[in-house]
Image (cartoon, rainbow, N blue to C red; front, top):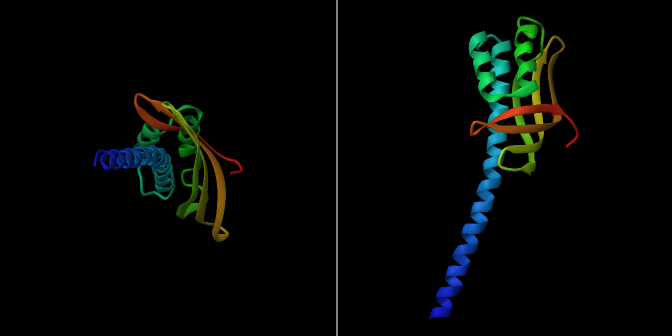
Length: 149
């Protein structure tokens, strides 16, 4: 009887350990996805006139840091009311966490884009390197650049 309880207890402990490890990995993926979604929705919403300039700036400041934030804030004014391609749809096709520590998450991400521009609609996939840094207990996008996955 004691042996059976020990086996049951061991199985429960293993399930908890695997569930915790999976939740941590899933948590990192969720952080990266959420930041990508927020950035894409904010910039494309602004460029299409659905989001006001100040709201877009405040949102970018809340989800980004470092050079990426500076670049996106500059691009808000640079590309407003231009013929920049509009994002119609996008889908994260693949996301692999390549590094995860207490203050950094690095990931390789493949995104399928459906855009519309002067030459019509186009669907394509791009691979990105993404780095998220923790600032004041909140992860923010620090780098988002094209690269092979």
